[in-house]
Length: 95
Image (cartoon, rainbow, N blue to C red; front, side, top):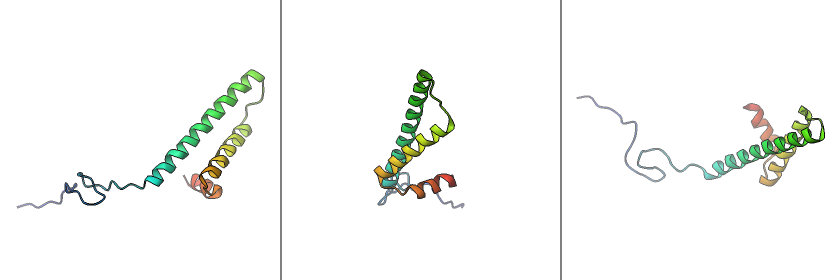
C-alpha cells in the first residue's frame, strides 16, 4: 500500500479556508500596497497632464521635471501615510 501526503488539507481551522491555505492575509499590508499603487497612478496622471501642458505652452518636458514631479508625489504620499521616505526609497532601490 502506497501512502501519500496531500498537498491540500480540506479541513478548516482558524485562519484557514477549505483549501488549506492561510487566508488571514495582513490587510494592513494589502492596503499599503493599494495605497502605493494609487500613488503611482497619481504620478502617471500628473506626468501625463504635465506633458500635455508642455505641448500647449512649449514648456520643456525633460527628465528633471519628471524626477521633481515623482519626488513631490512620493513625499506627499509619505507625509500622508506617515511612512519614512528614506526607508521607502531604500526598499525601492533594492527592487
